[in-house]
Image (cartoon, rainbow, N blue to C red; front, side, top):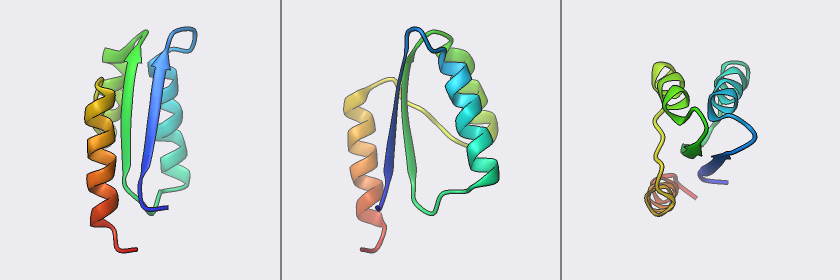
Length: 78
């Protein structure tokens, strides 16, 4: 695995809850590959701030997220 695309569509599940879960998980088990996050839905502004405070970014565009994850995967040696 050379990169991960995490896609969040927060309808029933709030984006900020998922963002808090991502941060908690990364604090205990850092990834060895780049992570690209796409999120949209309930509390997405809060979620974006939570991720930003941890040093991660997020996009709302699936097209942009896919481009980003491909680019990051190509930067990682096979």
